[in-house]
Length: 334
Ligand code: AFP
Image (tube, rainbow, N blue to C red; front, side, top):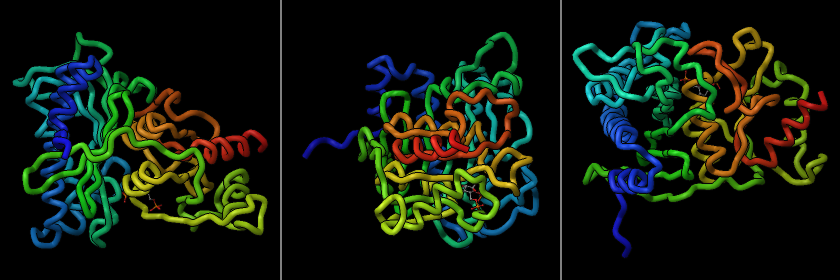
């Protein structure tokens, strides 16, 4: 039987191949280690009094779960001292988090949603951590919000960790998408899914159908056709899934194909969408494109968007390329 390849060995080999500089390798190793700690906290749930609301709100005005706050603290503390980061940004923090002055600053910017899908925690459904890595564009000062506002195509790495039946880290450093499954007995992430790819076609879609009456016409047309199945213009039946945890829904798309949509709708038009560009849409878009899929707002490639604000929201349509391209075509037709 082939020797199991650990995340550490994978990252060293990526570094040796010139695809992951030493500090990026260190950064990813630290994020993986922090994720293991978050996974332990998530798995204890009620046993450790960690369920329920924290009694605070985040910058989005959303009620924070206790585990949102705990996961955020774990990632901040794990990444402050290593010397690989210039600064961090989190869904749970209004402003850029600077590296404390008693620690050295490095060349990377780390952005994360520490616990995505947290409304699912209390019902024991898969949640996850999403992260994105950019290069710090200017080394002569402490990074400001403007230094983070880079298009998603500038990401040097992106990934997520799913805390589900198994804990899996899914990662790209620009050389395909690789998944690592946590061996809880040894504490190692083992390379179990090399070069994940998204099939170009699918019979499965994911959308919160309760918003149907608020969608724009192109999305209403597209979803109606899927629901008509073999009796409609598509001529085949489709299946629907909606976990309401982006990490879980995107992991399914990466694992067996599908199209995931959180499109613009009248309810959220003023805020630009539901999902956050910098630490949800961009990292997921990099992963999906690295796996051969597509990721669009319906009108623009997500990775080409020029961010205006750290916490801005965008419409997200991603997954099997032929389906995403069909939705984009419907937007062009109006
Ligand atoms: P929470 O982190 O508040 O649970 O939101 C999760 C999320 O940002 C994303 O993970 C889901 O895809 C989406 O929201 C679900 O939104 P709806 O609850 O409107 O379906």
